[in-house]
Image (tube, rainbow, N blue to C red):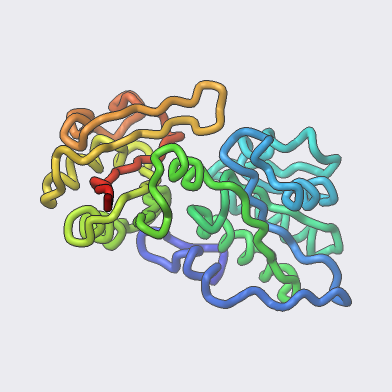
Length: 267
């Protein structure tokens, strides 16, 4: 994969990241580059291993809000970016680690839950600058895990779907509908701001035949001081459907949607 990609046409960097397993650790080759999940927004949920990778790095790269979250933990040179200058920042990052500096890329939550596009971009930038330098993921605590706890939806009985990504979402929406109707599994969903927000997803599920009385929880700003759990039926939540801008939804972009199937006692 080159640094030039169209997420609506491909190749998808998430597919690139998932293309092969991580190589074995080769101590003789030196430290790998790390892609660290920093947790859902409360530093108590940053793992000690992730913190060490950040602390020991010479250079740290990530979106501005994520880097600001960990900047007090490290003396590293910080490369911050947004969507528009992400490729430029990652190119600089690749050049720095190719020159022998230790590098850590940071992402909110856990890259394994909704961050493989970012991991793929990091890996692409590193491989173009230093083809033999591996990228290793250090998992974090995801808001999905917190939402599963708040909503009491065991992961083995739950379908997880992330819509928090660029590109086509048709297959993801099909999987969402099947889980809620045919398979009758709990749902944990990362919505996409702001065109696939919780109200939009509730309306979609109703249109696909989901029970309007299913319990729906919008878990907002999990682990933050202003965390809230908004409780609805699926039909009540669908009243918030419509629009594609920040002001068209009563919820922020820091939300997880949980939809619970009925749980019956065996006694």
